[in-house]
Each structure stands twice: as structure tokens, then as C-alpha cells.
Image (cartoon, rainbow, N blue to C red; front, side, top):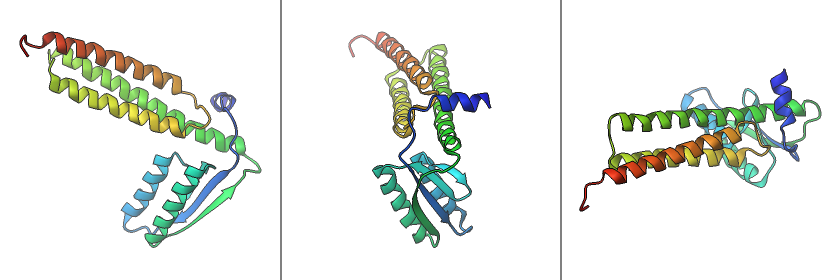
Length: 190
């Protein structure tokens, strides 16, 4: 309970309403349900209960949910998109939204730790090549892009953002240090 109160205390603002998608998709093939779930997750939607997802109201969220509603109907399902305000329980809805973002930030921190471990392995194995550097740059760019997606849907400054940013900065510095070592190991004349 203390953790929930702590998270609620860090909510920047309350939304000007919610968009709620209520849908039903046939149970077979299961990939159709998985597709809807993945799209909603990518948007940052939270589930209020099975097949009832919500996002803070915005023009971008409405466009995305209208598109998904259309796709669900195309899957032989049913879907209704509603605009809503919460009469009772707004703090619970906001806390759920915040918890989802915090979980995403924690996952980024975990992946950053994995990135740093992989870079350390390069040092242990003395792998200082441009190919390894390029591979690590690609991995770092993926982390950055992922963070930007989470930050874009973090409308209420969820806890964990600062830690994720700090972890990314550590990764950036470690990558810069590794690049310097690759350059130092470069054979002369190349």
C-alpha cells in the first residue's frame, strides 16, 4: 500500500479523460488476440479487465485506437471505442498506468545491465574490432529507441525514468570507452 501511495504522489497530472476500448476477438486463431494485445501494449494501454483497455485521452491515442478497433472488426471481432471519465477510482487507474511505465523503465535498466555485461565480455576476450563496435552500437541504439518509446507514453512522469536515463548514460560512456579501445587497437596504416 505504501508503494501505491508513493507512486500516486509522483503523478504529474490527471488526464483530461480516458479512451476505453472494449473488444472481443474469436478465440481461434490465437494469433489474432496476441496481435491486439501487442498493439495495445505498444501504445502503453492498461487493461481495466479482460478485453477492456484504456489510454489517457489524446488525439494520437484516439487515432491509434480507432485504427485498432477497425482491425479487430476485420478479424471477425467486435470492438467499441469510448471516451470516458472516471467517477470513482481515478487514483487506481492512474496508479495502474504509472506501474506499467515503471515496469517498462525497470526492464530498460535490466537490459542496460545486460549491455554492460556484454561489453565487459569483449574486454575479457580482447575483442576490439570494428565489427564488435558496430554490433554494440546497434544494441545501444535499440535501447535508446526503446526508452524514447516508453518516455513518449509516460504522460505522468512515472517513477523509474531517472534511473533508466542514468543507466543509458552509463551504457553510452561504456560504449565510448570501448570505441576508444577499438581505435587504439587499430593496426597502423589503416
